[in-house]
Image 1 (cartoon, rainbow, N blue to C red):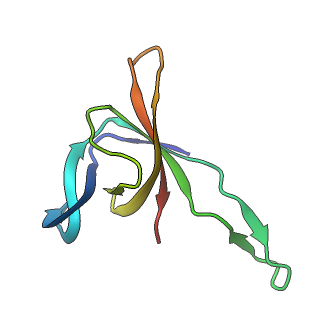
Image 2 (cartoon, one colour; image 1 turned 30 degrees about the horizontal axis):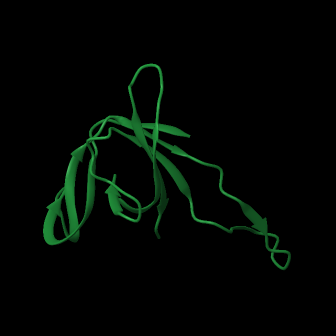
Length: 110
């Protein structure tokens, strides 16, 4: 799944109370919108042999492509599209169209 996100707020943790997208929330401050992609990596699943049901054995992991002006780093908690995520790692990537982007690996927290 690759989803284009062109108008959504990206927020980063801070010790202030703020209103984000009409929701009063604590500890998150908007760092602006971004043009990028949120692509979902495959998550591992295993079958519970007692019930026959699938269980996810690791959190959903997404790759977030952002510009290098966005102040997001490793272990930051971010708010995107109504969900909160933890940034596991950030790396600079290069492609033919853009000099460089940051690729954040983020996990959705339930």
